[in-house]
Every structure is written in C-alpha cells, then in structure tokens.
View 1 (cartoon, one colour):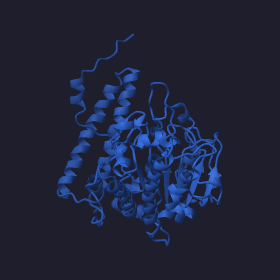
View 2: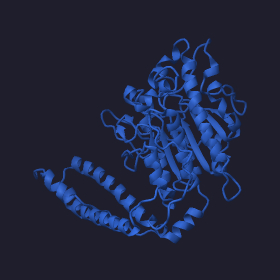
View 3: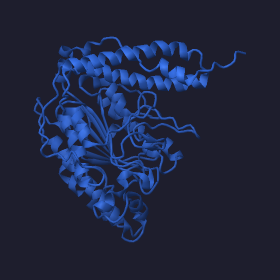
View 4: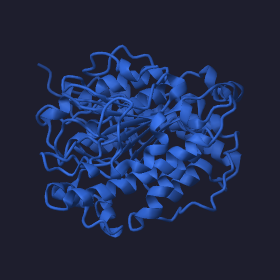
Length: 447
C-alpha cells in the first residue's frame, strides 16, 4: 500500500497564493446580451426569516388574539393582533399551516435555521448542508443582473453549523457569508468606485491570472491526497470557484454604470444598537436592489438561533418589548407572555408590510407592479419555542408567476416543507421535479 502523501502547509500556501478557474465565455456575458436579458420580464425571490418561532396559543383558555397563525380556513381566515397590518394585502398573501421540514424534526430546536431553505439532513456529527433554493434561483437567472443574489443577516458572516448566520448555501452546501452593514451593502449596490475603470480592469485581470495558477496547481495536489482530504480540498476549490465567478462578473459589468438612487431617507449608519432604523434599512436595500434590477434574489435573516450571543437578540429589549428574543419565546407560555411575544411579532409584521407596500406601489413596464413578479417567503423554522413542526409561514406576491392567494391552507404533518420549495422553484422558472424529500407540488396555491 502506498503511504499517504504528505503536503507541507507552507508549500501549499505558496502554490495556491494566487488562483484561477477559468469559465468559458457565455452569451450572457457581453454587454449587449446582458442588456437584452435584463430587459426581459424579471422574476424575483425574497426570503425573510425570524428566529425562535411565533406565538402559538394552546389549550382551551388560550388567548387567540395574539396567535401568529390566522384563525379560520380558506378565504375566511381572520388575522390576529400581531398580523393586522397585513389586512390590506390579504389578496396577495397565503398562510401555510402544518408544514415543516421532515429532516428538521430530528434536530435540536436551535438547529433548524440552517436548513430553512435547504431541507437538508444533518446526520450525527456530520453537519453538512445542501444547496438553498435562493441559490438555485440565482444559478438559473442570476446572470441577468450585476449581482446574482443578495445575502443579508443581522449577525453577518456565516456563523457556525446549526447556528448559521446566513440563509444561503451554495451548490455543495457551503454557507454564503451574509452582509450586515447597511452602508457597505449600499456601496456595493450603488456606490461609485473612485478608482479608474482601467485600474479596476487591470486588478481584475491580475486576480483572474492568479486564480488560474491555483487551478493548475490544484490538479497535481488533489491526485496525491487521501479520499477524506480530497473531499476537504474540493470544498476549498468550490470557494475558489465562487471567487472566480465574482471576478468574472465584475469584469462583465465594469463598463456598465451602477444605477443612481436617492439615499437621503436611508439610515446607512444604523446597526444592531438601533433596530428600528436597521431593520427598516435592510428592507429598503432589498427593495432598491429589486427596483433597479441589481439582483433578483435576496435573503434576510433577522436573527440567528445562537441564543444570547446573537446581536439581534437584544432587539426587543431596545424597542421596549420586555425581553430578549430568546426570553420572549420561552416566556410565551407564562401569564402575559403571549402578548409580549405577539407585540414583537406585530412590530416585525409592520416592517414587512411596509416592504410589501413598496413592491405593490412600484409599477413595472408591463403595467403590473413589482409584487406581482416577486415571491416573498416570510417565516421561521420553529412553531412555538424550539418546536420543529408547523412552522409559521406566509407566502406573498408572485401572482404573475402562477401563485394563488387570499387563503389559509392547512396541511397534514406528512406534507414536507420542501413541497413548497419545489412549487416556488417551478413558478420561478427553475425546473424542479424534486427537492430533497419533496413529494410533489402544493397545488392549492397554484393558479
């Protein structure tokens, strides 16, 4: 048996200090083709997540006024106090009751944010995710825009497995770092680079050449690695490919000016100490990104599931709702706790309502408005505190994409949430016969 090949770390770093994975030139890469594609009717996907579930009254004496999930069924659903701001949108929204990830039921109550958009199964100590639906959409039509997707969260970065700070995961399940600083997000979308175009172009060319060096060297490195090391090395190369794609995209869009927007009403310097301005600004940035067609895919994680360490955990306290996010969730079953949690959920719903209003009041060229061609998924991966079934879920918009709204649909426990993911992907034009453990589409929400 051959002895395992030993790779000196310093040699490895010198060999891969620079890198490139060249992609073939695609038709959509030219400025003319790019303009044509972007001018076609766009479809969009937005997913917004809040942690720790929602107010779920139980028992005969439960206070149903603060139930997140509406009462009634079908078109006769009645919104409770926490979601009343959405009443003007009842013909543009659908509530989905009973859905959850079957794989999520096997996980801890803090672990399921990671798989909200993936449905993956984490086995034992192997916390390996799979691709999220937003990234499948980005792969399908992301080349039509300057940025294939916009990934945001309050905590930023990627967090850690089962305590993720991002909703987005790439093709091999690698977490995509989330942006959490409004000013940097704005500058990325709309800011003017003070460097000359030629200097930027040369820097991008240099980056591409360096990436090529790594690809060449990686071939000789990989074949001498053991099976387990090859898997880790492939994950590393996947990250390199993501960098290569960003370099390539930047080259293609270098001569196309960024859109000009009015930033006077934005609180770009807000942070986790000013939640009122911060949450509002994150929604504003998604709206502007969609309005200017800078991207057609966006995710926003309002808070992660990392208990007291999440910077978003203090939001309710700063807004005088009586406790941290985690404490409000745990206290919902105590006297007065349901109302406290409900008031926080009411606040979040009002922010969402404002976002939907901007989408609905913004016309597109075909006489419709942004909301008709935008799917907005809103919800969590717990029902009540750390219960991984019957997620609070609402789907808005997308009427022109084949969605039917104005209803509350009640599903049985055997219907996986991935059926919703498949339905959304197909309506977005991302062909999907199946996704993870899906068993079909949700025909009740299809027009």
